[in-house]
Structures are given as structure tokens and as C-alpha cells.
Image (cartoon, rainbow, N blue to C red):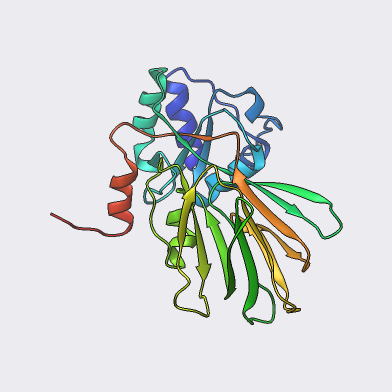
Length: 266
């Protein structure tokens, strides 16, 4: 089991390992509830989705996260399970190779004024609901009207999220430290509606538009799916915290990009 392999590799190099409750239950042990608050490093076993789940569970934190992908290397993970010993050797030096990633603070303000705040690493999305019909959406950047969209939805993505849902919707790929966000319509009714890249200091507001009664759903990072009312507003801005990811020396975003997208340029 991956948990045993990773723990054995770390302990062999004198690194103390504490398991969180759910992981501990898989190996019939008792784990720690507030494991992240006591750790110098959090290790996520799985893929990029597991690392996202880990981030959402522990919330904004300055504690670095290292992802061990059970399979092929992901965009966010530090290594595959076959490279665990390399990761352990790297951690044992005490000099972690850390890269920072921008995150989003996403506020959903209900028509009655009640606000809910969410954290997103990849994206915030407004999208069509159960009927499958196009929805009308309004987007503003720093208080100025950008556009009225008739589409399946609208995505606001970080550079990290540019390789996820936004890419699938036809948005551009962004370097991880580009310092920008991208607004990408999902299957827009008009072919002239394209993605727009804005500075990460921008404040983006999304809301239902027109008199349509079509249901509109809201989500962050593919989770926390909520139905929003016609007078609700979703406000997206840069989060004050940044995600600190551990990367093995020699493993770069661009190397992963070439492998994942099967680029074979000479």
C-alpha cells in the first residue's frame, strides 16, 4: 500500500510521520484530527484531485504540500509513487524546493446580502443548471461592464486552473507565475466571445443577467455546487494566501506540460 511505502521511506531518513484520521483508518490505526496545524509538511497521496481535496480540507495555510501521484505525474504533484525515495531524500536535506501558486478568494453574495466565502486553487464557475438551456450572465472587471454572455457558463481561472476546466472550454494555457487570471466562456452562443486574460489584482464580478428564470449553478474547483438566485453576485479576487507546493528539483511545470499534452517538439 502506498501509505506504508511512503511512511517507510520517510522514517528511514529520520522524518517523523503523522497520519490524519481517514488515512490512518485505512491501515487500522488512529490518526490526528488537526494534523496540518502541527506539521512542517503535508503529503497528499493520489492525483491532482486528491491534492485539491487536501487543500480544501486544511484551508489556506503556509504549510507546504507535496503530492505523490499514484500513477503518472500530475500538474500539481511532486512525484509519482515510484519516485518516493527521491522525494524523501529531498525532504531529508531540510531545503525544500517550493513553488508558490496563486489562489482565489470567491465570495458569493446572496440577493438578501448574506455572504459566503470560498477558497479556489483552479477556478470559480457559474454554469447552466438542470434544464441544460443556455444561461445569461454578466461579467464586470473592477466595476466596469465586460460583457453579457449567453452560454453554458463562465469560468474564472488561475494559472494553475488554466490546465483544467478552462483548458477544456478552449481557454489559453498560462505559465504558473504569470500573475494573471483568465475569464473563459463555456460554449458561448456567439463565436466572438473569447477568453480574456486580466491582471491578478483585478476584482471580477459575475451575476445572472436579463429576465431569464433558468437555474444557474455556482462551484469552486468542481465542488461546493450551489444554486444561485438572479440577484446574487459572485465576486472573485486574489486570495492573500498562496499555495506552497513542493517540487522535486528537475521536475518543472513545462516538463509536465509536455508530457501530459504529448508535445513532441524537437
